[in-house]
Amino acid sequence: MPRLVNRRPGRATRVALVALPFVLAVTAYAIGSHIRLSENPNDKLLPSFAALADGLSRFAFEPDRRTGEILLWVDTVASLGRLAIGIAVSTMLGLAVGIGVGLLPYARTTLASFLAVLSMIPPLSVLPILFIVFGLGELSKVMLIVFGIAPFLMRDVALRVGELPAEQIVKAQTLGASTWQIVTRVVLPQTWPRLIDAVRLSLGAAWLFLIAAEAIASESGLGYRIFLLRRYLAMDVILPYVAWITILAFLFDWALRRLQARAFPWFASERRG
Amino acid sequence: MTAVSIRNVWKSYGDQVVLENISLEVAPHAFVSLVGPSGCGKSTFLRMLLSQETPTRGAILVDGAPLAPEPTPDRGVVFQKYSVYPHLTALENVALGLELARSPLLGRLFGARRRAVMEEAAESLEAVGLATARDKYPAQLSGGMQQRLAIAQALIKKPRILLLDEPFGALDPGIRKDIHDLMLDLWWRTRMTVFMVSHDLREAFYLGTRIIAFDRTRTRPEERDAYGATITFDMPLDPSDPVKARIRAAEEAAARGLDLPLSDGGAGRCH
Image (cartoon, rainbow over all chains, first blue to last red; front, side):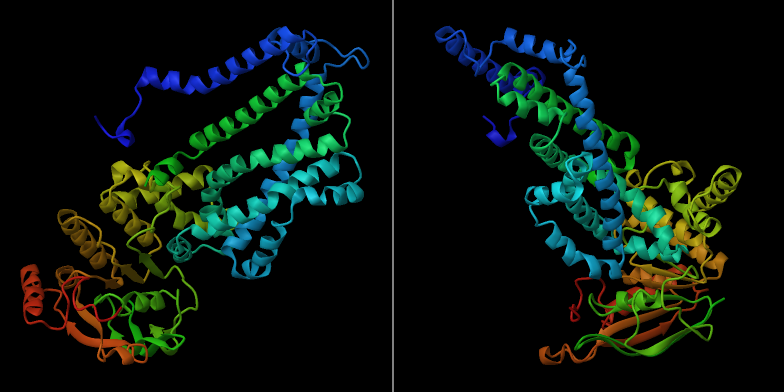
């Protein structure tokens, strides 16, 4: 009998094992829901699958009676817009500042300690300040995302750039590269795939800050909707919304991973060693 | 044809002296093999020739002019590792030096100019025996092929001086032999002055026209920081010597225990 550390599941077992926790979770929910509903048919906490489907279809396929809009769609567009701008701004900041700090001794001396302190400020604690300064509109929500993930991205990019072997930078100089050319031909191309890793890691935080900002002051958005519906204990809509957010987040992560593999084929083989 | 003159060079880090009183006149088109125990400042010496580090005292002159304060294209380099760029194919790695010179802003060429550069790079790849690997990434190449690539990449700038920091140290003996012959051929054709740090005496004698050994002359523990390594052995070799004679010289030198360790694990007094 081989040791447990040496035993690996076969193909069929693998599929079954991957599915197992999902199946268990859904089954547990179904049982819980059934028990509660059989005691009290008006129970709102664990709605049946039929009720969830109904809640989903009301928000995803039927126009809202008051505005005539399809709310899930409106909320998704609003949230993704904020998320995209927030992540794009953070990524650009992360690249610019990170490469500067990682490559240039002057930038490092000036900014490294400041960034270390900046990234320790809990972003949610500055949310009130953002609302006061930038108002309750879109800007403050985007700013919260930027404030939440840009410091991490800057520091991560700076670390990755600092990890590039010194030989590479010296070699570039012996090939006649200026500082700018070192950035464009040596550092930047090798930073992209690492940046994708960093963005993937910060996606969770970006969603957190997005939903937090929407929950507090907003008129649309996925986070706004679930916090609004909470007042009515409308679990039949909240749960599908949460599932939708999860699917979106998962898809982004998957898309970034694919992009990394497709656009930077050298990265995987280099990482393998 | 480039002469290098090292005048009374010292290098120390804080209180710790690494190299002391190094003076050396290197003739044009010399192939200088730098040997000695680990930590005796061979690589530090090479980094000073590269302007990656500056001497604490003394001066280094190239054809009578002081060395530029930072790395420049007239001094090419091949390191033991990390010499080539993992994100560029073999061809792109070689073309990089040409592209940088011809496109100051982007460091990248397009269209006909790019094709011209790539053709030139392809010729260089062929010259080091990598014609079939042009579109592969370095991670897909063997260690020997990566070092050939690094040589082609460095030589495309036609440097006057080539600096080699244990470039063949990680290669299998069979592959080494081929790459040694390639190196000799290129050295002969380009008329470069070469400095090579090596841990392998056989290699040092086989390639070099001059052997320079660095070692410490004071080895008591309390003297370790205060005194650095210096040149303890300086032997010219006739480049027209038949190969066997040189290998024999290497073996004789080792047998006589000329204070030259055969490998990294030798005397080891310089850590």
